[in-house]
Length: 406
View 1 (cartoon, rainbow, N blue to C red):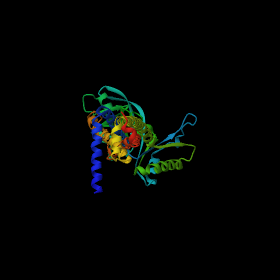
View 2 (view 1 turned 180 degrees about the vertical axis):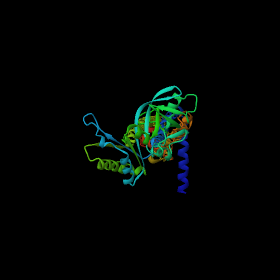
View 3 (view 1 turned 90 degrees about the horizontal axis):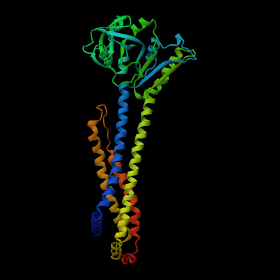
View 4 (view 1 turned 45 degrees about the horizontal axis):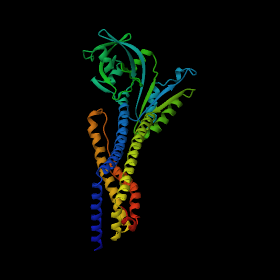
């Protein structure tokens, strides 16, 4: 019997709550709108955070996954010592002595003039060893990449960037043609591009030519490696491999030389800082919206308490307890915040779908089932928190005084 009485009381309280909210439609809609904006921001914060992290990882993997790179570091005060340069033997030693290494590559570059069919352009001539394409994940647009036979026979073959191809062979396929680089001629076997542009910060510039390292060694008369690439087996191995590469290079060159051995962690940290700032801004917006909506809910409830003072007194006179009055007004605050939260969640999930066609194809939007539940929980929590003061005030209304209130 008690269970049925409680059910009747709950249904009655819910009916009264909806009647009260319908009588103040404008104020209720404004409060719901504030909750909706805050809830949508919470959902979008999670979506932006996951998307930004995923995009950064895809960009880094496009440059090359699990990469460590090293170079001989010197300045004007300590001029370079030829015997301290990284060489091809160092490249082999790193690959053989560190078990977590899956691939290595050495590069060296120098400026050169390129000429094809009367069209000339300055270019960056880059000599690369066997593992370069695997590490840097170059995209071959036309033709092919170097084969072992090209290196063994010292064939004068090369690949050119798509930007250089457009400049020196704008209307024809350059593959198979002979290009003059400085005083020598090379056969073009392919056209390539970086999977993710390094904006000229690496050895590959917009107008670059790749040749086997053996040819670069033949042209310069030395096997100096300007930049050593090392690929670790897994992301977890990057830190230890970075330290191991530094030890191997120093053990092979025990002189005063200094080798700069780095990985892509600084880039990740920089991206994390940008992502954190973006998330912080959105969280502040969400917090402001939630506080504003909470103040709106409190204002509505306080006004409702004043307008319904006689009603509260009558209910108290007929036996309603303070806890029932408290629950009644908390229920009204919960209805407002719940309605706003559901609308905000729908908006937060719809915005990424709407803007997806406007974004770069490389950006993959990521979402999580946690964000709707988080937005719902926070919104209801704010609603109950800001609704408690008016509800407590209503519960403490004196029945005798309220019946005389006009």
